[in-house]
Length: 252
Ligand SMILES: Nc1nc2c(ncn2[C@@H]2O[C@H](COP(=O)(O)OP(=O)(O)OP(=O)(O)O)[C@@H](O)[C@H]2O)c(=O)[nH]1
Ligand SMILES: [Mg+2]
Image (cartoon, rainbow, N blue to C red; front, top):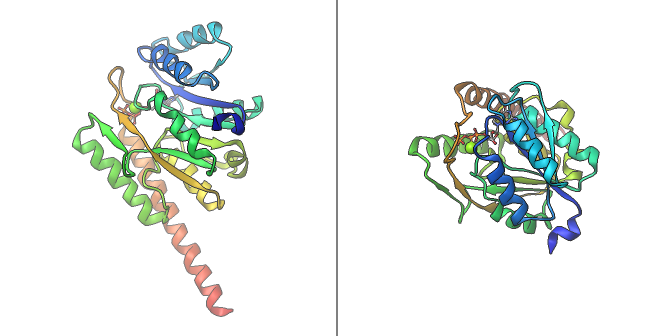
């Protein structure tokens, strides 16, 4: 199995108020991929998710928990989880939501593709990918956002905001995580962008994304505005960089 040649793997699962989902999703993950460990990163969820995660870790040596004091955004939680995973020495470090939108049973598809990639994204918007139970407005927002990213940044990626992923350790080592400042979902786009800029290979595999059934979404206007603002700034910088390069080449 490809997982064996890739080394030790861990999936980082950020949580904020996922008490209704965590046992279910971690159980599915451990059943689908018994060789893959889990790091839950909880931002002091008032609904007791942190204590539930501690219970899982006490019963299963493959699960560990990072407790953070307050809700500081998805990006900050992932950076913390990645730092722990790198410190422990994992070779493959993944991302997955706790709300059931990403199906652990489809994780093997991502591992299979990691053989010839530095970052694998479980993608809703490549042929074969799909979304279950999303309102049209949500789909339009995701498709539109991804189109904007492709146009402005020239990224050859259909679903750069997706949060079902596998990174090789070497990829995280090369993209300077210390300078990442994005806190909301634009964090995903920033990491994709950095991976492409570093000349590394990004491969998308189709997944079926299922809208959460239990618990509340953390998507907010502030999160969407951060995305729009950052992508626009990066896009302008990208244009300046490209025209400077063209000018320099013309002078040669
Ligand atoms: N630690 C931490 N986790 C977060 C934070 N915000 C969101 N999450 C988790 O990140 C994952 C994705 O968040 P969701 O609320 O599902 O976002 P979404 O998938 O865009 O929204 P829905 O489609 O409504 O589910 C979930 O596991 C959340 O619990 C945060 O600030 N800190
Ligand atoms: Mg979700």
